[in-house]
Figure (tube, chains in turn cyan, blue):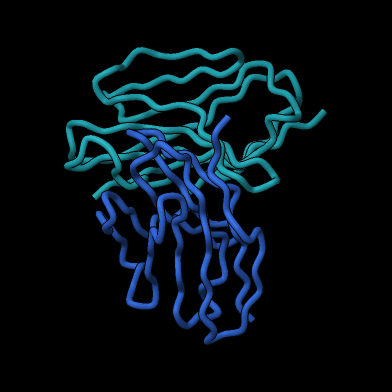
Length: 117
Length: 111
């Protein structure tokens, strides 16, 4: 069974602060994929990033960066110099299983980020 | 940019009625999914579909639910006899390999 835990249910920051969203996962599979999705107030789920279990390189995309550590089963997401438009619910998700693709996503409970001006 | 589209965006139905939620996945994708999100809660997997058959389903996806890909473009979720607890946002998603791209959702309200 897979499990994703996002311990922070809600975070509030002031614009331009850096913020890190935590994600801890559990799986018995040796090959798995980790994702972050953003759900803005409009409700849709927007794909942000995928990482493979065999690639622990951190990734940076503009103000976003992701830190993947297999040793602690964590896949944390940092927003640098946060902006009001970053206000959303962020979901971490895990995909694992016998297939190379098409496996279901197991989502964490989400972290609601509020960025105040 | 290709996207997953869902119709309707909002549906209100009476308890016991049948509803069909419709989705047009991204055209070259191979895997199709339905997820649901009860208000304020986590996103839950319902079913995945590949090569014209269900590849995986969750405990939520009981005999009241069915999926169909009636033609080359549409992917539907049918709930035969809706219950109050079926009220949720239903997301369709599709993927070519690992990344699932989601539609904007259909908010189903059962009254």
